[in-house]
Amino acid sequence: MPLVSLCMIVRNEEKVLGRCLDSVADLVDEIVLVDTGSTDGTKAVAAQYEAKIYDMVWQDDFSAARNYAIEQCVGDYWMWLDADDVVEPDSRLKLRAILENPGADVVYLPYHLGCDEAGRPAMQFYRERIFCREKGYRFSGAVHEAVSPFGTIRYGDAAITHRKEAPGDPDRNLHIYQKKLLRGEPFSPREQYYYARELWEHGAYRAALPILEQFLQTGAGWKADQVGACLLCARCCEKLEQPEMALHYLLQSMRYDVPHPEICCAIGDHFFQRKAYQTAIFWYETARWTGQLPLEGFCVPAYGDIIPVLQLCVCYDRLGDIFTAAAYNEIAGRIQPHHRAVLHNRQYFTSKGIDVTSLQQQ
Image (cartoon, rainbow, N blue to C red):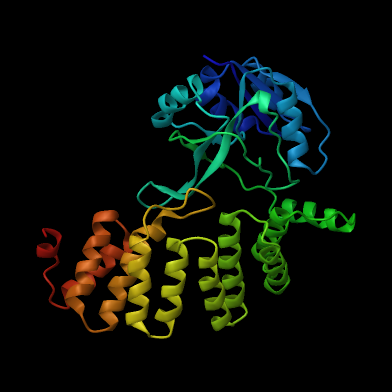
């Protein structure tokens, strides 16, 4: 059974670090913690778990800090977590089994962010999480750092859940990128993409678009980022009131991968807003039947089930087919029985004389 090191970087995480380590400390053989300038009781909390604590001056570079932590570990494998991550009880046994026998050089695990009304992850994606130390894996990128995988790869089922308790600095990442620009340092394709995402989140849509275009033209990005860039271009165009260009970028995404549910819903929304309901129906149905959500990149599970179903309900109602509309609402009700839109729609269809009780029994 291999020895496993947990590598973490922290600063002022006194309130959440214990919760994280409670969930995972007994699953690993050592905890390596790099503190980048805490002024609270973070180190005291870490000491309770016999963590090996190292100090490092913060350099506006997440990869540098993570790589320093990796260099201190001695396990056969290492894994990383952030202080506001937890391994929920239903994933602990799964993670234990993976750590006892990783079976690959790199293990990707699901990463869950937030919860929807049904308690499901509001957003999820797979992150490279566990690594064979002798292969020499390292992070790259000052922000949104990642490890470029090579060797044998395994996708595990033990989810890591991100449970952020307090808002962070919304400008931190953008400022790191801007300092990099001022120093005249070149951006990698991945950094171009994530810099554009930061600009989008700050409302700089016109500034984000050409950077996304440059990223796509390099052809060097990860497939998931290429699809994400197309979606982000479309959203920029929508904000800039350029709907036809938005549609162009959404369709362009299919150069890089099969249609993702979120892309299909966005195309459906484009035609819905133009009252082309039959065309919108095609794309919402496609969102439902495109298969599993992509392993790579961000994904919102709701785009694969309840969102397109609720939109299909509205489309059929607009077409005057109220019975089919009500039937779709009940399909949505099976996915999320207490969803506010489902409950509101039931009242509406009942007022129109539809026996929703009989539909629920079908």
